[in-house]
Amino acid sequence: MRTQVGIVGAGPAGLLLSQLLDLHGIETVIVERQSQAHVEGRIRAGLLEPGTVALLEEAGVADRLHREGLVHGGIEIAIEGDRHRIDFVDLTDGNTVTVYGQTEITKDLFAARHRAGADIVSEAGDVAVADIAGPEPKIQYRKDGETHTIECDVIAGCDGFHGICRASIGPEQLTVREQLYPFAWLGILAETPPVSPELIYAHHSRGFALFTMRSTSVSRLYLQCTPDENLDDWPDDRIWEELQLRLGGDAAARLVTGPALDKSVIAMRSFVAEPMQHGRLFLAGDAAHIVPPTGAKGLNLAASDVRLLSRALIDHFEHGRSEGLEGYSAACLRRVWNAQRFSWWMTALLHRFPEAGPFDLRRQRAELDYLVSSRSAMTALAENYVGLPFG
Ligand code: APR
Ligand code: PHB
Image (tube, rainbow, N blue to C red; front, side):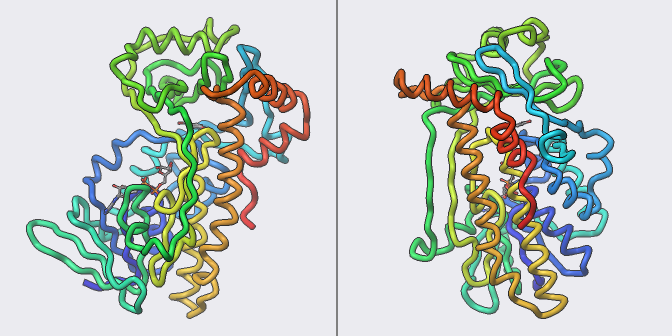
């Protein structure tokens, strides 16, 4: 089998890249380890910057997003129960963010790819890439008891943090920078209406909490917990009690409890592998970088990588120009590092660090008070949250 762009991974990065390239007549084959149902069933974040919405529009997959997505003009920060609004529309010349689950984006992308007759190999075993430094890179996999090889012009490694593409680049060619955090998030999906029309990021001495949503009847809730938290210790009642305490104020009184549909522990890490290219293998999305979820940047960064990679590949195949591909990694990393900085900052600002001493705690409180009382500080948060312009 031969193709122009072999794509490893059918997450949002791989599917969106395939969709954007197809609009320019560039052939792709996607090789995915899991079944489509498994990929569509994963519960992930769901907050889109305007730039991500624009890219999904360009890809022709934004109709349902515009019908069902919730447009938010700001967020709230609760400090020990005291709520303050950060108004994105006012502070960033009219920008908004859109709440629409990654699960739904993945479904829309799969549907669009199948309508166009895309080549998607799912449930592929032993996926590997070979000859990435030379002119004929290959993807190999096993399916139905046979070994298959796809010869490609270029390979896009969109196989997430635990994929094989990044690992196939030798350690001497790749620099990894990583930071772990001494806490995790307990993520809960619940059949209850959101307590407030906008997201609430709650800083509390008992730990951080985030109130977000998937629709007007389904809430998504997160509680700071320990990295080795046992889900059995979190029956529904304890979750609601803890959320109420951390939220505080009138919003706590409005909290409607309901059955938890899903519970999981989400690790917090910052991670960047650079460069995002080796030979003819280009990494995009979680395969190259991870942010802690506090700033909601993971999916948006994956989309901005794909935006750059699709444009570079279109230039390469349509016009024979290679500057875009040569500059791909450096261009991505500028945005990636800024999002790393912002995600780290929001995480440090809002969480309770177990090792924090009395000075750290007062300094953190002073920073929170400054944030919600200074227009400049709120603007800095707002412009990063809605996403800086593509440079
Ligand atoms: N072979 C083939 N596919 C693989 C392999 C492999 N060896 N390993 C992983 N995959 C697949 C996974 O099953 C998954 O479907 O690659 C896909 C990667 O998708 P994501 O993890 O969703 O990563 P990405 O597309 O970069 O999307 C980034 O997802 O994790 C969130 O916060 C992140 O929202 C962001 C978005
Ligand atoms: C979510 O809706 O799941 C979500 C929103 C904002 C975040 C993280 C997760 O910062």
